[in-house]
Length: 194
Image (cartoon, one colour):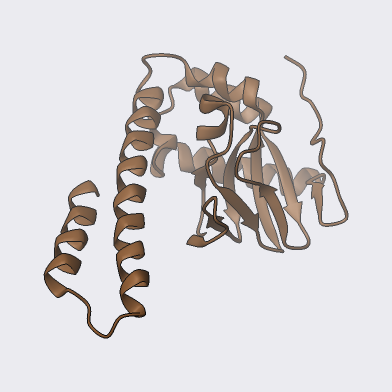
């Protein structure tokens, strides 16, 4: 399959173009195949497909990568450098993620819509795997697809419990007292999902 260009180039983002830079990013990805979850679950064929089809995008300004409810641009991403923020449907900050070779956004191609929003920070470098490529790479019954399906189930459980805990705390702020027994009970539910 021919390699498509990154379709969303803006003033804030542009596909990585220098050969030296691309080589360095691909070398880092190859290292990640043996060292970073969930990339370690990719079989040799899946690894080759990702190396051939991934696009590296440099973000020069803060930008929305995708928003809650989107049904277009359902790509998967790997963060190489920088940071991104996760927001829920109420536009409340849920988490801030930074680090090397963080794989995210894979729920979009599977569920055909976005269940949260992502803001990517400036000076971030992200690998983009287009929806059709990701679905082909997923390969049913592979170790990678099993990991992805289990991870989606666990994230759903964790975020529901986390939302319950956060709602309880926020609702209790307006009151004079917090029911500590209920707080501990909700907190223990979060830990059991991790």
